Image (tube, rainbow, N blue to C red; front, side):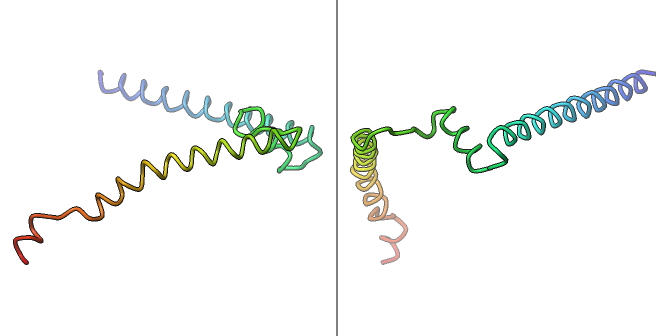
Amino acid sequence: MAEQKAQKGTRAFRHLSIFLGSAISLWSAAAVLSGLAQVNWQVSELVRQYLVAVGLMQEFHTFVDFYTHIKGVEYIIAVMFLVGFPVFYSNLNKTNEATETSA
């Protein structure tokens, strides 16, 4: 008896998850298709607008804005290198006790 109730609960959960997954899939497909229709069926323009909206990409209106952004990225890369290279070098030249005993 308890096994049948467990099977009914599992079956109901399976059907509910399939229904919710289907509803979310239909909603997301409709959202993508309506977005594509608004940008004249250009996938790259839809991706660009999404990246700008999320904040992963910026629109620069002047050359100075663009250059300031690039300079900031260069500074971040330089700091990462200055921190990462000594760590990499120390790991590369680390001596193992096993290699010392065999030599």
